[in-house]
Amino acid sequence: MYRYERKFHIEGLTRSHVESIVRLNAGLFSEIHQRRWINNIYLDTWSLASYHENLIGCSHDRVKYRIRWYGDLFGTVAQPILELKVKHGEVNRKISYPLSSITIPSGLSSRTLRELLSNCDAPATLRGQLLKLQPMIVNRYSRNYFLSKDRDFRLTIDSDIEFYDASREGRAIRFPEQDCGGIVLELKYPVEAATKANRISQQFPFRMTRSSKYVSGVERVLCK
Image 1 (spheres, rainbow, N blue to C red):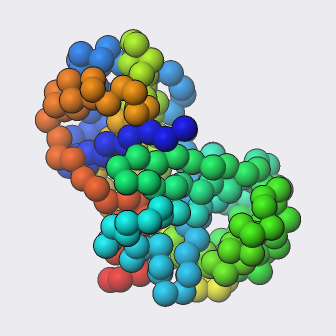
Image 2 (cartoon, rainbow, N blue to C red):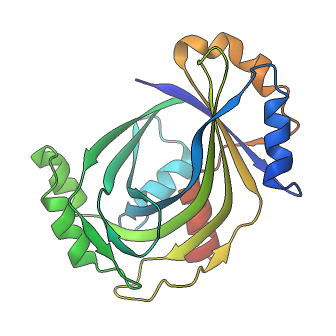
């Protein structure tokens, strides 16, 4: 199902202050999930095709590839997920495939990731595309989840955002290359709720942004 995502980049406020603003919104948001750490390995070509397509806003559907898991950054990951985030105009959707358990060391191996992806339960054409990609950025952040009273709007608050360079084979990623600071608030809702969205978003005194976390990671880590 396609949905809208509106993102707001927030500077100079604590997470608790942002949460207070969310709770005062007319959408009557309440927390629905315990705060947790989210980890992502973003995959791209050596020429950063996905990154450049995002910047120029290609007219065709854009796909962003990532491996996601929750909890600790390093160690054994029991249930990693391959996610394809498909952007179609102003809306997007996610396609997910479960992956086998993997151990994330302090240095990532392209060979290990290729073996993991080649064995996933995905169409053969997709597996072929995945084998052309490389790990580029590791992204990690802490997320809170909220839901509006009418259940049409989901809202997340991301803080403690970190980026790691994963583009060099076997290079240690134990320490973040860059802590971006700030907080990212995301408002997510289905297409049929679009007419009510302005009433929700206009009450946030924050700057709306188009930037994705992958784009921010590339620019802070690989393009510095």
